[in-house]
Image (spheres, rainbow, N blue to C red):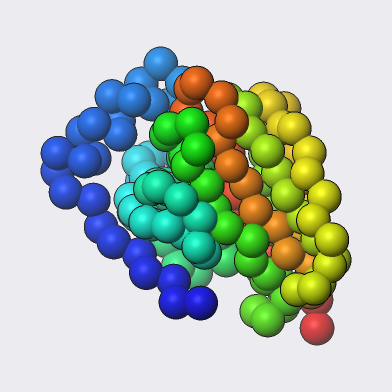
Length: 156
C-alpha cells in the first residue's frame, strides 16, 4: 500500500497547533541538539486505508535516533478518523503507541488472514506490535486522539 505523506500548509499547521494547544506542548530536549521544535509536520489522508486525515508531528530528523525510525505524535482529530490495518514486519520493525490524550479502539491480528481483536484505549494505554502482526487505531471519542509513536528496528 502506497504511503503518501503531505506537508501541511501554514493555515493547516496553525489550525493543528491551535487544536493541540490545550493538550500538549511538543517541545524537544534532545541531547546534543539545540533544536526544540517539531522537526516536520506530515499529513496523511486515509492512512493505510483508514478514514479521514491523520497528522504526524515528527519530533526527530532522519538519523537523530539510534535504532529507531520514528518518534512522533500521531493525531487523529475527529471521531471516526483512523489508521487502517498494516504490518511493520515487511520493514522488520516494532512499534509502540502511547496514548497521550483521547479515546480510541486499537485493533490487532496475527497475520493478514488472522482474526481481528479490538481493545478500548485511553490516556496512558500502551500498545505494541512486531513481526508479521497487523495493527490499526481509530478515534472513538469526541476529542482528538493523540498518540506518541515509537518505531524501532528489530535486531538482526
